[in-house]
Length: 165
Image (cartoon, rainbow, N blue to C red; front, side):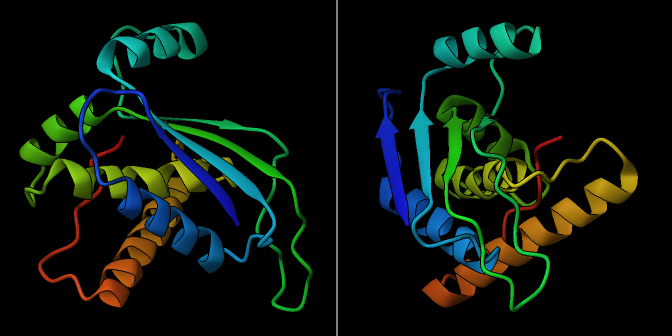
């Protein structure tokens, strides 16, 4: 799995954790090990520009996903997953810090960025949360991936509750 993490935000973030949880999520979703993913961490101004340009919405957001080859998890355990370019995930630590501090289960900016990384991966894989049933599926899968990764790393305490809408 080729995953590049590029921090252009000027904020210190746990890039290794972002890389690790992205790798864990892609393995859990059975994405081909030769697929490629890019994660870019940007400041609020850059995120706001992307949010306006691509979503026509004001202000910075927490995470944006830009799929490339529209890869999907294999439908059966014995199916060979396709290989390709997953795309880009863009994260904003300033928004993540605010969301983590305001969440029901308060957590750090880095914990929020880990959650947002998984959220972005799932969007790249075609998951969405516009409809209630889609939201339940996506957020359930997101929680299972974050919880599994945290357990594997021996991290204690409650997992961050979803703060993305």
